[in-house]
Length: 186
Image: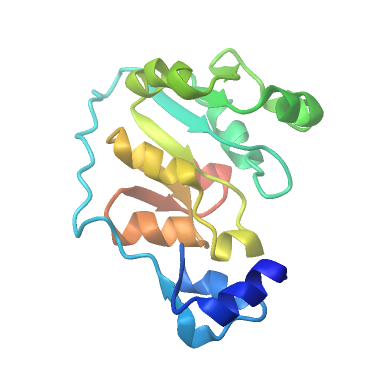
């Protein structure tokens, strides 16, 4: 609240990842809020280097928890032999929530705990990046940093419908937006 009171007093414009986020920030005059402008009008996503019959490699990097529920992703991938998922999340989060995903673990799902330079070979191996998380209020305004990392690596994205990320992916032709349901994802 102290920071916000200083912003109110001394700042002319506060840039947010989305204007929707402004509804969650008290004290600030809504007229001072602006959405961050896009880096460019066109994001260049690489061609999907995949042939029917190949193994399709999916990659998720990010959190796991109350705001990052990915059960439908695990459920879908566990049913598809020709699809592999590399799931990269902090080790402590995986240890805490692994039990929720055990029924879906299979040979085509690899759990890793990399960061920084350790992510580079994982990005190079994958065909598609995943932001297929269960929609909830948080996702109505939040866009994780990994969205832009995925874009930086030129990876098409599969996002869940019903949130800011899904809308962003759809509006910028960055991949596919799918209802949060394993059958729809399949």
